[in-house]
Every structure is written in structure tokens, then in C-alpha cells.
Length: 550
Image (cartoon, rainbow, N blue to C red; front, side):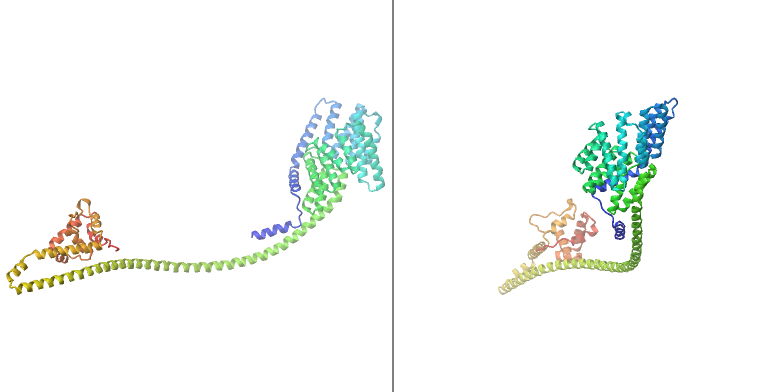
């Protein structure tokens, strides 16, 4: 699904141009500024309303009304053509009423400037012709020549006849020559005219230096900054540096919006460049914005300029939208097919998952059975190992006892043979009474029993070397069996040694050790009563005493 959405996004953006990082960042800043146009216009309207409130005050003089109107004209000059013209006409009437020639001339010059901005060049020039130049002071002469320069500069720019262009252009230079002596060389008016001359002469390096100086004397967000950055874009246009031209057009447009300048050219020129770069969406957005500003300002000249550009950009934009719709429809078909395939794949995967789950359940059951078999087998192996150990232990005991038994038997055969020889000798020597006395004594029996105990003790302790220690560990400390220095086992230990060998019957133990059954029983009870743990399982624990590994 992510892959499909990615394809859709790429498809919709296909054909869009990509700007350089700085230009792209500036374009985003411009679009953000455009979104806040209403806020900047509200600030402008608040200033205008504040001036209008002053006009409503009682007792205001005609001179005060004139100067407040002048401030309103300045606010409306690039904001609303009709309102600027309205307050200018009011000032003409006030000036005439006051019969003040300077105020009349100032108002007429301002009116001509406003009319020229709107493309009404003939009317503007007619008004300026009525101004008596010789009566003007220095300030008014600067305003007067600036107005004439503006009228003929606009006429030369918009004329379609080459001969007329040169005529009007020469007229502009005549008025510039007339104006410059009245200007300070570091003033904006002087530097602007000087920059224009360098630019028109193709001296772009000096024009750029002058423009840089002018920029240092202004700040973003005012009409002057918008104008200077626009003129800098003209220099880069002449140098063929399209990216730098765009950069300063954007700066100019941002400043225009922030200062609520509706009579602007920057955004229109920028829209044209973006259209050439195939960034149709932005071009359409900017030209519509410029059209809305021109509509608000109500300038016939600006409408004429935009009306030549707007249909071209709008048609391209509509064509692109239509192409995107076609691509989108195609993509929808593709997505629909992919969706069907995806559903089929999901259905197949669902079936496979179900089958896999069933197999998994079967495998789980088999695994459980195997685990049970393994568990049983492990238990069986444990039992088998135990039996093997017991068998190994039994074999070890048997082997050792067989060897000892054979040795003892051999010794007894030798002893019987010696005894037979001795008896035969005594009978032959007729020592019958001596022989009778020898067989009557118990000394021989005691010697044989001691030898039997000695052989048993040696054999048993060879197989169970730790028997005494392990047995004592099962008894409470105060009842542990203490052997004499010459003893290896005593009667109690021999009884439990025979039990460890598997002889548990007291009568058999009594026969082997030559004691009464009751004596054997008493010994067994006494030792078991001294056990640390359960006395009933004492003999079972004795059976687990370890055999020597040797």
C-alpha cells in the first residue's frame, strides 16, 4: 500500500520543476506572507481609519484638513486608486478655497502622479502642463519633474512604436537633467535616477553598486524597499541571471504584501518566470493573487498588463489540471486492478495461513506426543541408569567378595589339609588323648571367628571406604558410633554392613555374625532410634551409601 501511495504522489508531482534551495525557501516565505495578507491590510486600514477620525474632529481648520488628506493620499497611493484620487480632488478644492498657489500646484502634481500610475498619461500630462514651473519652489520642482519623468517613462515603456519610444525616452532624459541639479547626491531620488541612467546605458556594474547603496538605506516592509529590489531584479534580468532575478522579485513581492502595496509588478513578473519553468501551480497562484490586488487597487494599467498574462497561465494551469485528472483516472484504474489482485492475494494468503495454522496445530500435537515419549524415555533411561548403577555396584561387590571368598576357601583347604596331617600324625603316634584335648578347647573357634571378622571388615571397607563416616552422619552427634583404636568395624557396624550388602533378615545376620536373633534385633533398633531423620527410612538411606569407584 505504501508503494502504491508513493507512486500516486510521484505521478501527481511529475513535470513540476525544482528550484534551487535558496529560491525554494524564499518561495515558501512568499507563500507564507501571502497567507497573512489580510493581517497586513488590517494594519493599513487601522491607520487610515485613525486619520479619518481626525478629519471628524470639530473645529478642524482647512489647512489641517489638507495635511490630513495628504497623509490619507500617501496611505491610499499604492493601495486604492479611487480613494487616493478622491482625497487629492478634495485637496485641490481646499487649496483653491484657500487660494494657496503652492498647495494647488502640490495637489495637481500629486493628482498627475496618481493618474500616471493608473495609466491615464494624457490626463496626467494635461494637468502638469497647467502647472507654472517658474512659480514652484525647490521641493515642488522636485515633485514636478519626478511626475513628468514618471509620465513619459511609463509612456515610453508601453508604446508599441519604436520611433515614439526614442522620442519619449529622450524626453525622460531631458526632465532627468532638469531635476538632478535640485537633488542631493546622496538622496534616494538622485541615486535612483543615476542607477536608471547606468542601467539604460548598459553599465550594469555601476548600476548594481548604486542599487546596493540604496538597499542599505532602506529596510524590508516598505514601498521604497519593494521598488529598489524590483529595480535590482531588472539588472539581473539584463545580465541573464535568472535565479538572482527571481530572488529579488520575491523580496520585492514580500515587501509589497507587508506594506499593503496593491499596485505592484513583482508578483506578475515572478509568475511569468515560474510559468516558463513549468511551475504552473505557483505561477497560477501568484498571478491570481496579483489580479486580486489589481482589482482592489482598480488600476486600468495593471489590469491591461495582467490581462495579457493571466489567460496564458490560467490556460496552462487548467490544461495541467486536466492532464493530472487524466493521470489520476488512469492511476485509479491501475489501483483498482492492483486492489483486486491484492484482494485475491489476501484471499490466497488467508487460505494458506489457515492451512498453515492447521498444520501447525497438527505439528504441535505431534510435538506434544514426542515430548511425552521423550519424557517417558528419559524416565526409563533414568531408571535404567539407576539399575545399571545398582547392577554395576552389585557386580563390583560380587567380584570383590568372590575373590575374597576364593582366597578364604583356599586358606581353609590349606588349614584342613594341615589339620588332617596333624591328626593323622597324632593318631599314628598314638597321641589320642592329646588330640581329644585339642579338639575340645574353644580357642580354635575364637581364632577362626576373629579371622572371619577381620576378613569381612577388610573386604567390606575396601568396597565401602567411607561407610563408617556416612553412617555416623545419619546419626545424632551424641549417638554416633565410636570405634576402638584396633577396631575397623564393631558389631553395630557389621550388622548394617550386611544390610548394605542386601542381607536384611535378622536370623541370617545372626548366623553370619554368631549372635542371637534377639541381639541382632536390639542392635538394629538402638541404631535406628539414634537416626537424625525418620527411623523408618533409615535402612533405605543405608542402602544408598556409596561404593568405592576403584
